[in-house]
Image (cartoon, rainbow over all chains, first blue to last red):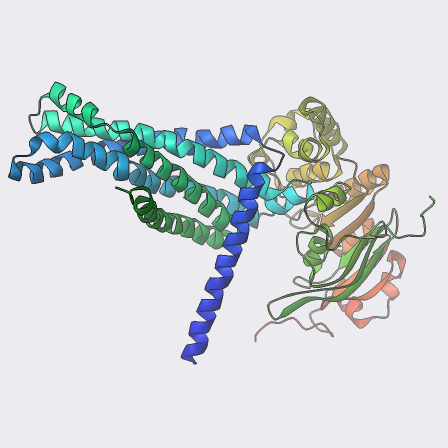
Length: 258
Length: 259
């Protein structure tokens, strides 16, 4: 057993995989601008990716906002800075937690579903069947999902932001004894367009990552039920990691000037 | 026919390997216009890969594939879709789209590939379903609600929906009971005769092969090792063919079974 050969093989596999992903991404992105555009499929996918993710994203956002408020109050009250709680919660939700929590929840829900569906289509030859019926599988399956995810995610995050702030409001007024009117006024005063916008840009990028990883892993699944299973797992794991990595990069790019 | 001399489809020394495994090793095969050719051979001899090479789903490593005298092996994108418009294919597991109702499955190629309106495509789909013995009320069902035999028939209806000039059948009778298998064989013969298509079937079901083939070719280790008219299959004098058509475990073909 040669250690260098083993390392070399892993490295080559990694390079091959990266190349395949790059090629796939290229076809998917260029497919967006080339006709035909399947509007019906895009709206259908927006329902599945965006609308049906609302309950899970809303609930997580609500509790995240609540717990964030409890913890920030805990820290701020040591310095008598309770008045800053609403603004810090607002910034935390809109800049980071809204997009990241929504991204991770949708990655678990949607990337898995996409990978399982497309993976099953692959192993039952439905993708080959598309080709024989003069239909480009990337344009028919991948492009609508990516477009739908990129449009849906910012909307979803805007809603998650509102519910998260509301969760903070409930925690502050119910458990911490804040005055409701004062809390809301502080929040509205602290609302800055840039904070919300940065979160929505992140959301669109996360949407792209989720749909791409779901489709890519599904498309390249091999060998029956087990293959589809591991494609699903890989889709969720890889999209979650990429979301967190992209979040770091986006944060440092967007907020580099300030 | 003016160009009657040119074969409809011709594979010339097509090669394909996956990693170190050689699947097609210089395969030559010709389909005459309107001819029904059946390729027989054991599991894993590259029958499906051969069909997928012609359809462009798998890219061959070497060799040429002619359709109407034009080399299509390297075509991509639009040009490939243009060539595929004259093909129909019945998949082994039917490969119906389970997100769409039966009629949309049958009409899919018409709507997406040929730009037929949905209403008109639905009428054609129901007519084609009738040709394979399915009533119009099946059209609204989802493929998951159908039995295996019915799914095969829907798959056949989808394959012939756009009146293709070339139809491929991948194991058309596998997994069906003998009676349903014969029903499918009859449907294949009748529908193909009606459309006048050139067909290539791959199977290891000899009953089916004898019934639908004008000519039989045997694929072994990535090459065609014997071919001839269906009537000569029993007097081929080829020990590989003899072993295969009689289904003997002993013979020149060694199955890779570990004792």
